Length: 346
Ligand code: F0G
Image (cartoon, rainbow, N blue to C red; front, side, top):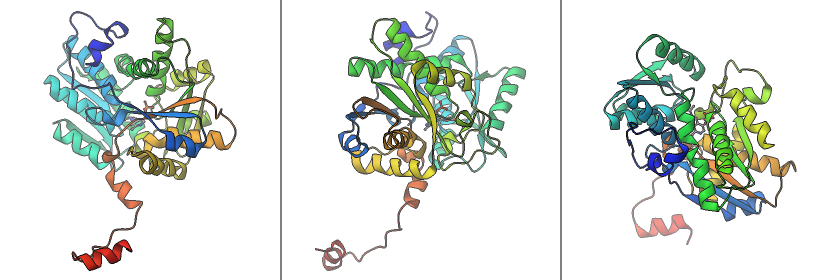
């Protein structure tokens, strides 16, 4: 139970309910084949797809919903590219309160849509993108008695710091660098808060470089200005004006890291390699960290002789349609041994 395990590092009071779906405590998977392929000494995957709703969002959501209940809320709202809405819907269901989720039409992976509906959220699909959805929910939560649970709610980032603590606890200290996708820029900000806090508490002796990666068609932080029409195959990070922009830039600069862009082709290649070489199936956006690490190594911009952790933010089954599209449709074979042996080429 995340809220209990890291109680001392979280904004817990006696009145904070112990909400849980057994989030957190995700595996840190050694990835030696992928490390060899990329040409780095050591690579671990923080497999956040194994959270209860299949993404890292559960860490922040359990905290935000617990605090909302503590404050007497009976309704929460968020904008989302899919995972935040799935998580908000699940924790609202668990807590017995209402969730309203606002998502961009046609740009959310099927699994995420299914989750929000099954968990019983009120699903508002808008003819607009994530950035417009976020502006909408900010205004709604100002005007009406509903708690905003996007990462502009500070409790979200607090909850997400726990992933940094887990990595340090497992490795016995921080890695040299952390590679991760950047969308609304909350996660990179939360990890940095977490690593700094753990170092200040004497729980780790160093902090990692933060290496964040946006999709090339949705890279406002890289370009230094908002992107009006963000586009990428990685719908989870299809964001043109991230809420935690300033915090992410601070995380980048204070850690001596960088935020760069990777193309959809680079993302897809890394996405397939994660599954093919390590048996870790994630959603496309989740592969951006590995895609970025590969690019930095190829360009000689980062050390080979270092320990890297890549955050695998969401589960592959969130977006199975795109996965299947990568391959030729299998033609059925007659169900007799001769045909099957022939197909196998034996
Ligand atoms: N990876 C996945 C799978 C995500 O769903 C997100 C964000 C990110 C990475 C980027 O994290 O926003 O903290 O920089 N998804 C949000 C959502 C925007 O609505 O689910 P970030």
